[in-house]
Length: 208
Image 1: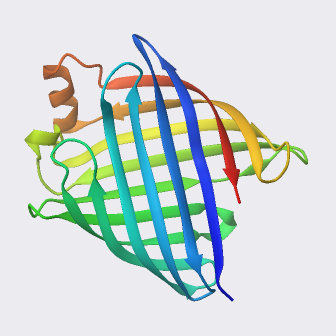
Image 2 (image 1 turned 45 degrees about the horizontal axis):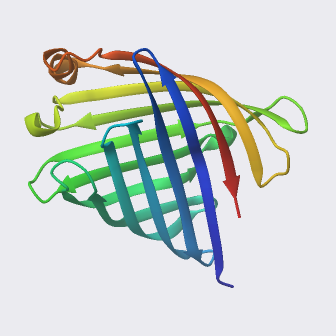
Image 3 (image 1 turned 30 degrees about the vertical axis):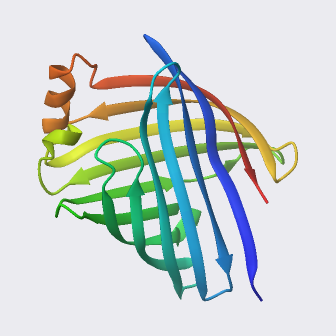
């Protein structure tokens, strides 16, 4: 049986020192239990300015274990140099119900990067859910045109509290801390940016 599923995981307004911004993180699939076509998009920016970062992915996904898929495909950057990347990764539920999405990206320029995202839903009541979330971005080499240093590029740690009005729709509030590290921190400082940023967020999560 073929199914279509779409989720807006994070659609949020972000308040931070000096400027306010926005972020989207959506994904979906079409397919059956074993084989699926996945699409993903995420991006962010500050109000009144050009979009800072945006991308879209198209992936073939095959189940390799219950609730766990191997994925491969292509990613297109929609901002900056607008590079195209080959993608290979895994996505699914780890033991103790941790959701993980990890992927490696090889650009047409030969740059190798990776991203690891993990989150966990802690139900506080029938409708109230606390979600810790972590993201780590890494690079095998320095990419000066993108202000990315080699090694760990940045780390994000967040905590969101959402209220499920219905299972398919839940507004939330939260806080997220971002750190640029190593060479990426140096690039940020040279550009006059703070390598450590706190975001206070309000948004909605939905699926259908």
